[in-house]
Image 1 (tube, rainbow, N blue to C red):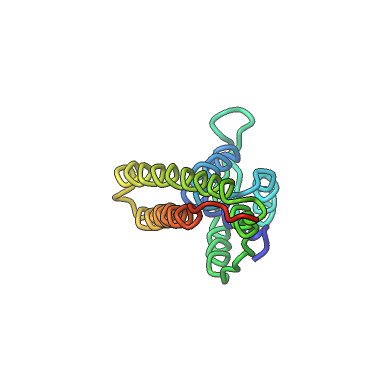
Image 2: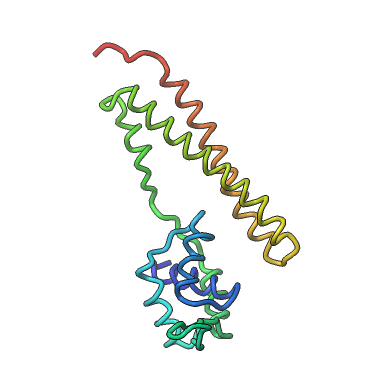
Length: 182
């Protein structure tokens, strides 16, 4: 799936929840989807324009002067379903931490341990954030039809963060011995 198709999926998906301005859509993608999906803000506005030209979204006057609200159309919902049912293409991994650890002999154990501790700290912080988000949204969204789908994505974040903490702990232990003499 091309990058533009994925951007269309994020934009149409956001608008399928509720109509919103381009700015509100940008914020929603950053604040909500940002836990598991990043989207270039420079792509959102051109994508909205393309989707409008293709009839997948429609623009109406917003609550303030010069603010337009975008809403998904029937053909936009059909396009979203088409995009959502395309096979998922895995992207090649690019993990800077694992790249550094692979060449850790050159970097040294102490620096590698520092990198691992920082990764553990981030994962612990992310875990707290996901758990807080789960508690907050389960109260606010728990009785909506969207909740089961929202919850599985949040739980994926929780499980990933827990796995990262466990891996970092195991790795810190593995690298806890002294540096062998060179």
